[in-house]
Image (cartoon, rainbow over all chains, first blue to last red; front, side, top):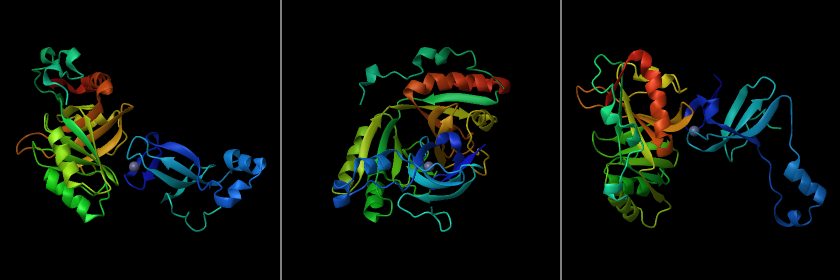
Length: 96
Length: 207
Ligand SMILES: [Zn+2]
């Protein structure tokens, strides 16, 4: 059984969760967004990290509290190194 | 509210009142149903005392703030924790509308939401000495009494169906029975799954 520690409900089985892809992807805003080239827009829309190792990603507790949160997961070992709430920064040492 | 003469439990077509296991002795598992409970979804900020005070005033129950806990008296309405700012109020048949109105009045002007979801779910009751064993066949929660005792609840999956599991306090001398709040459209499937999972322990249907 692979347990994920929901920051609200506590440890629950993986099947209760859904993966939400890379975290901390910020939509270009303000004046900078007006001047963005097509290539830069494409980079924001489509290009994602695909590391072998620590990945900062979003998860949602679909079949529980339905809240989103962030996780730092090693994509190689599937070990979850940290769980932190939306709006929080990744723990020191795990930031990419 | 649904006109009462049109009310129909999602398990009606199973004719459970004529179920062969109605009078079984020595059953390790007891299944039942509480139909027509009326549900209200409540959202708000539990850190604000004007919110918690208003809920206490309208429902006469202290809002459960701790994760996976429920509050309520025997036979009365219950409030189940669903998330950090979300609760499910389980009201007795016919009382949901009145309670929702009382909540809306008490919460007027606050950043809160009261949404009646009526009889969107039915409540399957499961008890007996092997209730936890049967649930564990299809649910990954830690169901040991030390981890999931009376007064606790959880939104989870049971046999792949989304459910809200709740173990209310039992009346003195009575056996505790889990409540499984399941969406109406999943109820017949889940009932069939529970009957099958109960085979090895012996089943009694208390309807
Ligand atoms: Zn959760």
